[in-house]
Length: 123
Image 1 (spheres, rainbow, N blue to C red):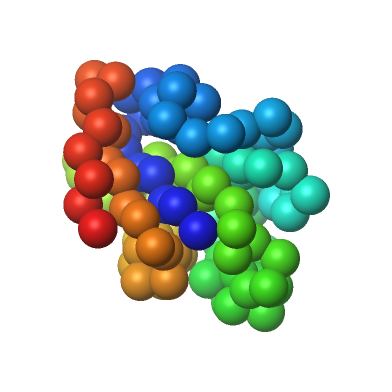
Image 2: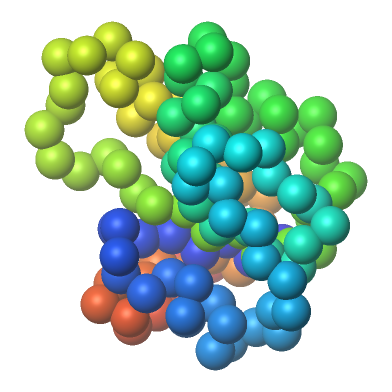
């Protein structure tokens, strides 16, 4: 699995399409459950936000479905920078997304950070 992360609107999907063979893309930014039939899955932070609202762990979902995404490109916004919200759900979202990113980066064969459309392989 290849894990790509970076800030919002930094060109992560374009970077992924340029560097990897992607024919189908699932966008979870609206909170939908990842479709593991797709070559790449982006917007994982949207799924994390839904999990925060439901009181579940996004990383647990990925652990339970590991065999379905091991050959995928997974793309996620890093939401750890900036002001920590006073809203309980949004604080939980930030933590859940961080734990998901830690898990996916640990499991990935490659990790890429994208900033201003420029990617750097971190692992």
